[in-house]
Length: 587
Image: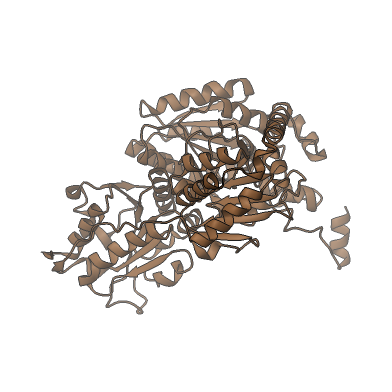
């Protein structure tokens, strides 16, 4: 039934209808008429330090809650500051709704104050762009953005000329549209079940789609029927519980050697809810682990992902949870499986590989390359030893966000989760400054769970201003800052390919930057940690402090040792033709 109201009321009523409780942003005149009535609708406005942080917080909120995350800002420069974070949300499949007030409709194209064309900027990093071209369409476009964000698993943009917040019209406020997802086509499910029934060494890759579908239990049941190893897809370490005997660890950069070796032996691979992103299946630890002759069954709710990065034997366009149920039912109907015959041998191999990997991690005290041997003399905690202690002390129900960078990426070997919706990484967009604001959004979505950000010192320089958001808005989180005084990921490339000629990678200052003292001056608790034996207790106390509303910054003083580079696949040894450059390279 239509009701007479203003466009601002129509927008806010739509937000309330979709269950929005929090909106992240920086105040601006462009949307102040709607902002004024947020409190009356039970919506909290969370003012941040930077708009990029706002959109990352919306991303963290969405991923931790499973519902929409919402951000809003001033037209022009406020909105363009969203771009990096919305791109990150796009590759994380987060249902973020970016509300983007725009220059007034009668001023477009005149080069007015804070004017830019906002739709083209976001066109390749959103699933849908709703533009309010008349104020009477406010509720219609708003509800469409919210529905599409959830249905298509990605960010949407609601673009509103600032004069269209005013006026009046008859509006119908829609309820959320619920899309029921099925298991996939009968033919493809039958073919997949037949392949699995004949498999002697199946392996399941559990991806982000399993988390989105809340299908962990169904994935476990399928794995238990097959008695096969399960590996997490890259940066989805929460897609299968680490305490399950069939868990073999994550794939991808700095992942589990055990999982990689087991996957290499597979004759049938089930990519359950995974797009099989190319970066997440690169060789690692010197292992070419992707099985060249295996049959691939890929399950994805987006048909465009099926066979996109790798040829598949069977593509199932369906929900990961529903598909797992359907495949299990078919396998139970078939009865005897080829994998039943060598089950004990396969499980023994799984245990042996996992034990060997854990022993290697326990003994991995220092990197072994010449550069690392040289910088060990400078002191500082070895990153891997420190990460192992963090792993041991991490609360069972913690949520962890990770930034991009060398130590954060090495953490992939040590981040294990028993519960889903616990791990939020920058994913394949790989932007710095992601983890800390995302942890803030996650904490607001799940206030009873500890929220911990892993951040390198370079990325921390981009994001530590949001300490003020934590303190001012009483959103307590823990940031673990790895201070090794360098852009480690890029420095490793200069070590391996450019003769240790360092340009732009060292972050030294006359006196080593004391991030803990800076944090204290901003109102947070902080501690500088220099000994591995102090790491676990510090994390435990910091997570406990969240219960008392305290944000804590743990500054980890790390050695400059570096793990393997990100992009060995994308770099080559330099070639120089001009003599002056040849001489420089050969020095």
